[in-house]
Image (cartoon, rainbow, N blue to C red):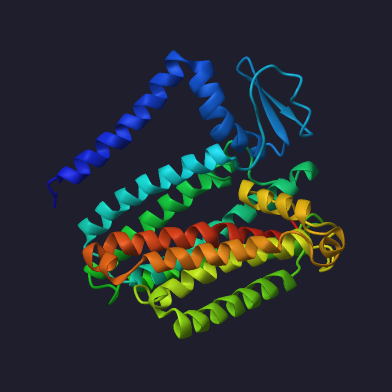
Length: 375
């Protein structure tokens, strides 16, 4: 059965196609400016460096030169990229996320699903799966020096941020369409059941593989205390904020209910995992504390270290304000999702909540599991 294309879909296709055309034509006509100093430096270069386990990569007249240290690439005249995120790349990913989200709205409209929060709960295992899949690549990267790595370049690029977002997105869409198809054919009562099973199964496979590596290699180790503490403190933060808002500011939760609490929990996981991994990893059994992976994390740590007394930093660390930032931001976002917004466009509202939760739970799960498996 075919569906006529709507005006909104044609507009979305034109905007996405136009943006892609600008980047392609700009890269062809102005390769040094558009490709090397924008696309490569902020988007592909970091992936390339991460995929090869390097600390930097330099664009040396088109030849990508890897470096073992952050300063090793400074000898080259061209742009230099490092693994991880920058403010420019994060803005680019945010714009891309909004575009993809709009496309998914058209998909759920065609499938006639997603007008309630059942879609959020059905997709929630995929949010955990995305973070766990990234840690699989982290673990494989830790094994690279031993010759035991099983995911080589260019395949490992599929599991590195931001490419992994598209990988998980594609897997999720395939699982969603398959689940809806099973429900329409009467194989299952509701599409949510096989969708949850698929996401939960993929997450379990990642964890099982990481446990196997921890049992069979010296580069990966198991420290379940990080997961226990992260989940426990995140649940405490979420429960405490739920009680406070329900008692003194009930309009915060009026438009989302428990879905809003899940969003707060997702960002609490990100905040708590960062605090524990950045400041308490050594005390909990790792050889050293981990380091920030995002510019916002690094900014918060730098500012706190600059203004907080040294004796306070020595006792409680300098990453703790990041948890407060995440919780306040999550509450403000949840507050924006009022009843009127849901009534006007329920599917877009539900998908937007899924996206907001993913922005917290994906990176948070990765940081939690990086510490849990010592990678």
